[in-house]
Image (tube, rainbow, N blue to C red; front, side, top):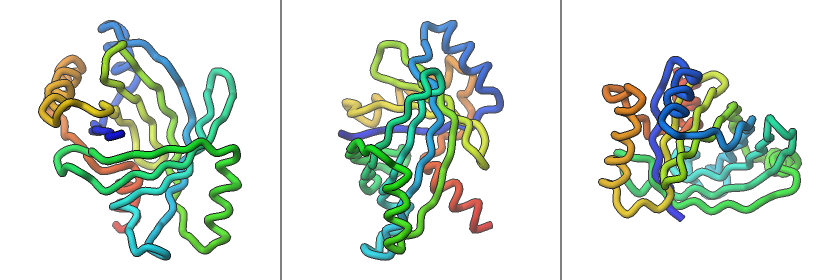
Length: 184
């Protein structure tokens, strides 16, 4: 499965949500996600910015139900959009799995966010993210788009609808943004 995504910084997630709802989008999930990215340099010489290996705990804020998964995110396929292969597997206890990696000597990077998932019944999803230590973003995502051009066409439609036409497309992951901030 190939995922294409772009992040756009926003000031007010509630305002974005209202515009989306007025345009026929609906909230299909509201979660707290805690991600632990495993630094693979120790065993494979691969920096966390190139290939991601993530342990995630996702808690539904409505039901309180939590699930875990481990995800491999392959090397970027494109440069002007975050596009790469992604493979995920469910795990019963993501916290204990993260602890195992720590005990094996791996360094972990933590990213925590509150996320609303917006859907319109089409092939684009929009995530409203409030990321601890980074701020607020929307993430526009398509799985297996027919082409990069089609992804950008749909992205530009979303940006126009939200009044974000002039805003920067960020192709870095939240992990990469946090690592850059730590280096400053």
